[in-house]
Image (cartoon, rainbow, N blue to C red; front, side):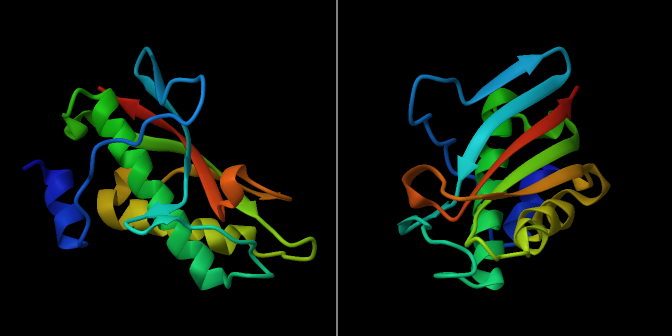
Length: 153
């Protein structure tokens, strides 16, 4: 088991197979030493995590949903690296989209669920640039969608 996967296991996370794309796109693109991972939606073992922040869901619910996106991002990264997630140099950037009620102001607090998890799991390799954006709706009514850029060796 790799160092990263050992740390994930300590956090109670086992990376499952990377989710398949839902439409006509690829789950990731490798360009040089960069991996661009398509948006991963909030899903857990019970299915899609749906709802609108500030209406149906609390900030804490949203942060948990964002964490599930981060786990899927790592699963995609592992697939992109041929199963060797230790090729990760660093998380470069996250762009998080939050299904928000019109007056909901806490998108950054929601996306912190992904950011905090990545730093806990990856240490300094998990520190990244980030955007947290409000969305009036997201595919399938999910609460959160996050895309990422990773640097690999």
